[in-house]
Length: 166
Ligand code: HEM
Ligand code: HEM
Image 1 (cartoon, helix red, strand yellow):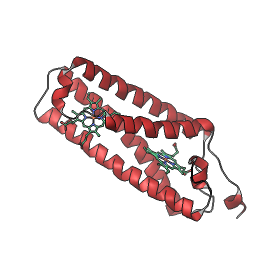
Image 2 (cartoon, rainbow, N blue to C red):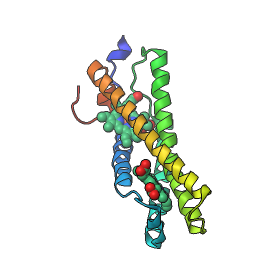
Image 3 (tube, protein in one colour):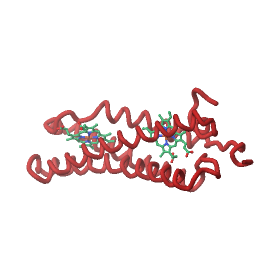
């Protein structure tokens, strides 16, 4: 019971990583490649690959920082199954957020070496698109869980979200 009342907080750097990535990801969606033909433009291809590389490097930095310094805000008395569910969604988001730019970079590489159409590049584009559908599902689940905690008023929402605080 004591633990439920003890409010855990994320550091400012942890919050900056979390919300910085929300904006970076939305930017990535807005500037997305609409058609593979666009990659014929070498400056666009270079920019896409550079953006994807920065995204992956920052994600690795975030992951290392979070794992080595921060703890979930879930109260200790949270049911085991719920703890596992939260962990699974968090790890899956990291995995998918890395796999999207990596598959994008692979598309860029294949395109760059002249494999501009055919089974191989089409398969990687399909994989890239499936990963994007997957991240939408994971983010939807994650936001629903955050709202559930806001309703429960157990401190999880306010440990990360700067608005509608409990
Ligand atoms: C692109 C969208 C988002 C992604 C990829 C994302 C990802 C994550 C990840 C991986 C964590 C675990 C802590 C960490 O390693 O940083 C986390 C924690 C959290 N997120 Fe998000 N998030 C997103 C958007 C949101 C939004 C929109 C909200 C609320 C409206 C939210 C609320 C929270 C809360 C409350 C926690 C703390 C959970 C806990 O302590 O166990 N997130 N998020
Ligand atoms: C963080 C990095 C990236 C994000 C967030 C991202 C996001 C997206 C999104 C949202 C789509 C549309 C998917 C759909 O309609 O189902 C897409 C498609 C695509 N992306 Fe990416 N992408 C990234 C990196 C890259 C890179 C580096 C390349 C290649 C250099 C690339 C090449 C493509 C291609 C060829 C398509 C398919 C376009 C078509 O429908 O013909 N992406 N990407």
